[in-house]
Length: 357
Image 1 (cartoon, helix red, strand yellow):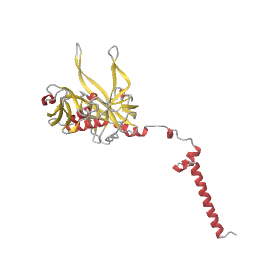
Image 2 (cartoon, helix red, strand yellow):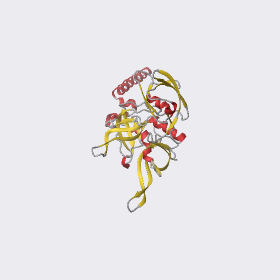
Image 3 (cartoon, one colour):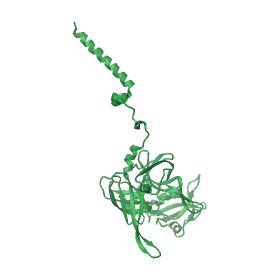
Image 4 (cartoon, one colour):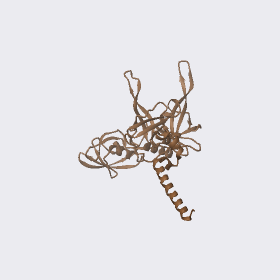
């Protein structure tokens, strides 16, 4: 005879045993904790891609924002018996920076172009207009009109370090989008007074990579790829050097782009002197002053030590030049100078630095 109490005891024992079995299964079969079920854990081979190191995810965020750029120019084909115009096409890459269609690329990619076409990774071919360029940093800004553009991931301060893993995305030799990997061997500066202190990396760059994206392992833009290092051999022929390639740092490229969009060009201030800092003492020693420059007209001389500008104490020559470059032309700067040990105050009117200078 089955009583009510025995039924209750049976149910309690069953629940208890079931709980113990379930806990053992979860402990012995971790896949069950992820909801993948017995079939995947017991009866199938583990996924090969699950343990594979891959940059697929970060590249999925950044690569669609890198475009192919085709610039076309008309040149006169001069010869002994002809003077016929001919069409010349140049190849490069670019990076979509904003939703409203601003694209960063290299100045030499679109220099003297009569027409520019941009091939987006979704298959669209768009005509682009040059907004402006900056030969000193070899950057140019283009504008396209289109919807649903993929914007490359950006942060205000990428904080790049030597040894960081990077990837260069571009369109070398018109093969379609390619990706090369390397590490950073030198992190460039970001001041407007500096024109050649770029990021150095061994990520391979070939013809057509110029203007493409240098991204980190998270797909975040670090710089605009520019060029590889070249030397001349014994026959005076230009030869590429493997493993030394350059990119314009993101912060500098973004600053140049914003100035071009707002002003049509990059406006830099200059005084016209060269100087260097001391190792263990403040101030910048003037080593040369350009004839007829703002510094020359203000009375600055070689051998002078500039201690402060507008009350800001000086300790770095590069930061001093950056500060002057960021100052609007026409601004008067007060220079605290030591000449032969004697204090001197000089007022200098900032001039504009032109690309040809």
